[in-house]
Image 1: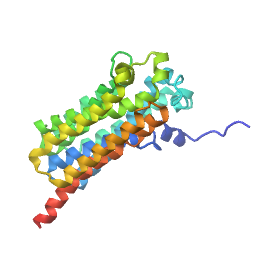
Image 2: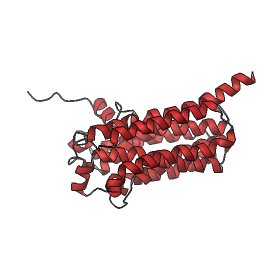
Image 3: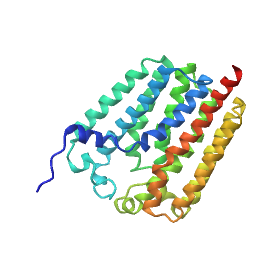
Image 4: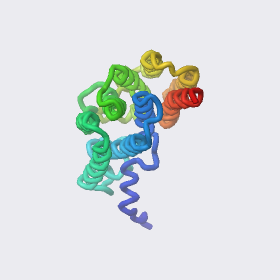
Length: 294
């Protein structure tokens, strides 16, 4: 019997990776961390809603653009061969329309903030659109992904303070290394397929130094954030969270050191817990400070 046809809603949810939240959560946690630092604590419900919803919507829009750009490559990769655009279940026009609508709603949320945040949202969208195409020409396109994902940090500071101070750029740099870490793990899953079809990834570029580089990227992320946030006096809660994140980095090493598809994919999927741990340290520090002040 032929497989039952799927509803458009079901296909669209598949298109935006509705059932795979790891991709937008790794964007969310550093953005919220920046929002808390910029606000010197809880930013208020309005900004919290704007950045949680905006992060989800923009990541979903990015999936639409990515699947259109990669549709001819994805059919040759085991993990992506069944994506809706690749199979033809969702047309290119449909996918781009869905992506554009999601991006417009996200931009509408940014319009409720201020001029600085609105201005920074424009290059954020442009880099997000450029990322899928960078895999054809740049040896480490994961760096372009990092730039795209890191705009949440920049826009968060802009929305709160009307400017982007030096600490935001240090957080931006540190988070770039975290993106390189988890997206190289992701790229290791598809390395054999990517070599056959000519896609460029950090996993291919780093070669036998991939595992060592990922460990270094984790260390640089936590070290740069630690130095950048030290003047804020976050206290033991933050440093305990950083230690817990470091322990997770060690766990990731055990998952990826044999370079199996399964181990590398698990490492990527659970990465959002590392970001959540760091954010919990920041938010918990401000909460404790407020409680002790009262």
